[in-house]
Image (cartoon, rainbow, N blue to C red; front, side):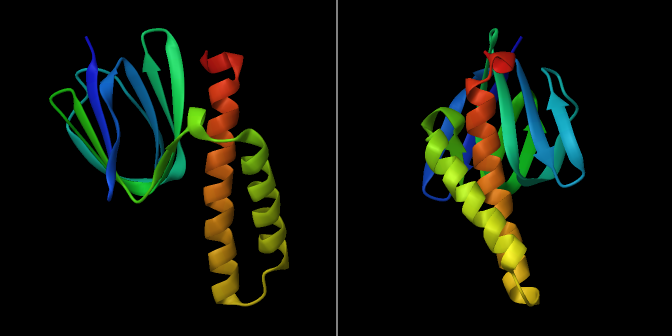
Length: 138
């Protein structure tokens, strides 16, 4: 038995396929979703979604949004998403390092909030590409 997974950003459908298992980062922690999951509507945090298709794991960096599970259909609406396989590791590492430096140097409330958001996004992208190439998910 499988789940139908659809990930939609404002300008495109990012993912539309079947999956056996999905792990999401929600605002209250990570959740695992298997076929016949109870209906659920939840807010998503910036983080990595892990998807198992047969015996292979894929990752995707999600930049916040909402997920609705009903009748083995998981619909995810996100602000932005990027498949781990589409992310360049060196570029993601460089962006992460710059975001971390900006966060450490942030002064003032607004600058700290903006730097923290950029750091979370960079961290999600880096984790997605690293997990995608890791043997733990392949």
